Length: 360
Image (cartoon, rainbow, N blue to C red; front, side, top):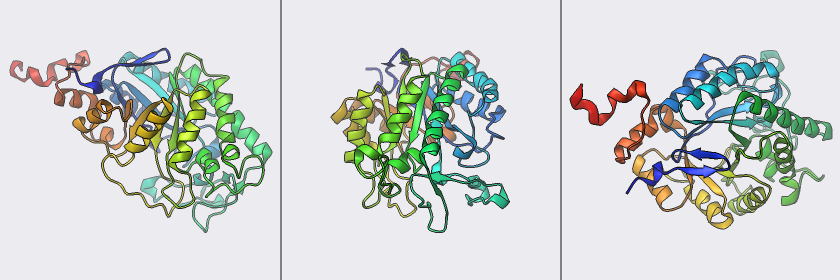
């Protein structure tokens, strides 16, 4: 029987040729938000490597939304040209290009990892950060509570970014509501202590995410999928949890979201994550079972048989690979060989297919 990992799945007007998706992974290699040849080669090589879809790293909807000064952006029309080159190449390799729209909130204005993840100040090129409440990620960090004008700007920034994403040729739009960034900050009572209509109750804490969803839907083609990445739990007492994630996923499905990309954590520095292979898969499985929405599983999924089992057991519909795809850009080709699945290789690479060794 063919491997379920390589069975196609149709979502809206798109057919994913297999269940392997490349997760958004920050590259910290842009200047003033502009993509460059690093992004073209990094993302393009994963398309050559056989993945069904490649989701571009957290792409900032405004300059202040960036995690670091080196983050990708889509806050001005000039960004579109290079992004279009990337999406065209991905499509030429029979893969689907996606973009993750993001706002870092209180986790913005830091140096890239290889520069130490240090908080930037105004003297060192940093900028003011915004959050639902004036609570820093670390105790010694200041952040500004978003006022109504700020919230309105964030919504309009996401809307404008979605419009540019259409012009740049992306076919999946993902909203980043995970990993402690702005939308997640509004979702969790640990970071959201507002007393207005954006804080307090579950309905109030999800309000901004729903308003942003509605704004991007007004620009995004109705026949193309929208994904939302969530952190299913904060891994911290009193935080956002799996029950709320199920509830939110039901509402998102009702409002037209197609995929829930299920991660976890990232909101607070004192989280306790019990990392192990498949440690987040049960969250995707529960959301899928209780809501019927298409889910993506992610996190320490590193082997072909492991990924295949998740699909076979209907724990998730898609597998999102991050670090493993950094180790092996040709992940899908490798896994297909290991699972005896016959899939097309790029013509330029055909002579290297494992069963052709004897012909060389």
